[in-house]
Image: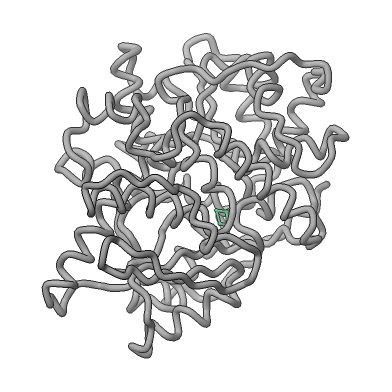
Length: 398
Ligand code: SF4
């Protein structure tokens, strides 16, 4: 199988992660909320007999409600938020770079994949400042849920339990990083992956195939098409380009589909014209391909301003916690196609147009990359070269 995730601290050893979810749902003192990553909805159906790439978003939301979650939210909302922060950061770095600042770290590398972040920290720690400081969507969601949403509910963050449904095991490790907690209370309490959700649904004897469709709750459930394509290789940087282009040029972007950034080749590149400023982009999926791009950065020969890396083949659609695709490219292509289709179907396709994101900044966060945004939504990276051994974790339970 492809279910390989990188865990540098072997934090992925919990055998039954469904039990903590069931315990939280059974606790009357807790409000339990779910967030579902973009790639999950295009793969979960496979475990219930649907064709590869069938979107089961509405049934997934209904299933989570039946399991007892008080609110079902969408990591895609936080993906839009990530774009606000990461897109702004990219423009800040580019501005300095174009003004001749030699200290600014270019290319900026995406930071939403913990498998890739761990790889950089372990093997190329001298380049860790090239990583965007923006937290991943999973962690941005947790930080906003435990501050903004807990405040809306009028409850202490300790009584709010955030459960993530993610495509991989690396997200469990990410959620456990100590910097993603406040006074010992984690921003994301429990992170389970797609197959674990399928098991929970079967455990609860829910007839998934017969479930009606249900919508995500608000305010953390609304997303644009840009947030959805995060689940596939090239999607993060395409989403970032849609927003960065408009912020940079102050013009409306009419053609939002950056076809040149899509595809399944292991390494891809494209130059996007920001009205006279050519922004050079590199994309890799799979750590072997990523290594080629980062060696260029290390050698000072990288031609790029921005690089997107996802550790898994195809990006999160091919994550180690997803229903098995056994490396079959046609399955990954179908999952990617479903996400691009969902993007097209969305009335809003640029992250900065998400009205709930606009409201969040207006009422709570202030400016993108401003002081509160920095405190809640950005992080730092460490040199892990000293930690001996790289654990390649394979889940063999299924
Ligand atoms: Fe997890 Fe793989 Fe997605 Fe990275 S690419 S976040 S390791 S599923």
